Image 1 (cartoon, rainbow, N blue to C red):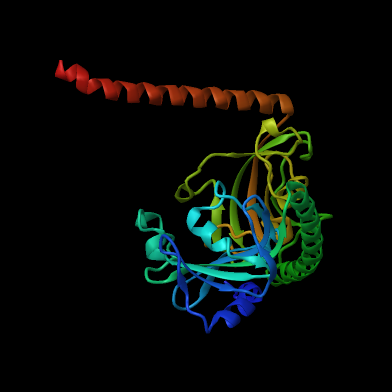
Image 2: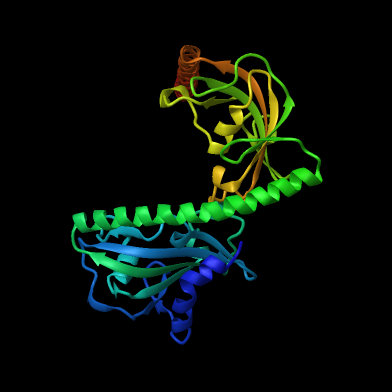
Length: 344
């Protein structure tokens, strides 16, 4: 993963702290406080507006796990002992507006109680590091809420501007791929390229229906990251895509799918080429799907249900689930009673 966003967040912090030694905190934490701020330290009951980056290093490269500058922007959290673990509370209590902080912990300590849960990119002997920049301190909930609203508006503007640039770049990449591979497609108004493999029958899909589908998702270079037809992915059953605004009728999907499905009907098979802003955007979806990935979905339309049929099917699934749960609980109860009965 690129180090650019990490450097933007932490370069000044790490440069200023390189001459400092880490202080010992509680429960294996070590920290450096870079005091460049002014005013009083944060007090319990106040609210902290922070830029936070979390990363680990395998000895060769940094892996960023979370970076607020690349996502929703600065976070605002209450500073109290109910919401902040004591070992972190004691460190954060030393901060003033404008201060920065580097906190680290050996991954051995982080997963000491359950090493089996340690992700593969975490390596024993290396550190899990968190950097914090304290942007502002708010004394009241009203001040914090107002600042959060302003931050969200600014983040949306930034995302919108970034998405325009990414859409243009992705569109060029997709066009070059389609031309190179002699693929004929139809482009939707939003920017999804749809390759019809098999034409279906009946009316075209719209926002009044629920669509039952089989699918396989790939990256543009052909790496499969998800499928409901491959047993290895663990969910081999049709996906019901809810095109309506009624959330009780099932799952909604990414915008690229919604636009692509509108060019299909029952029995259709197609391939969607989806620019990243119409897919998962900046989100990393597992090891095989990096942020800002162009998506390619092979989709088969198994059935198209109106709202009444979709609601009936949903109720049927709920009944089947309740029956399975009852059978499971009955088997557990029987197993618990068996030793007592055998003893008698």
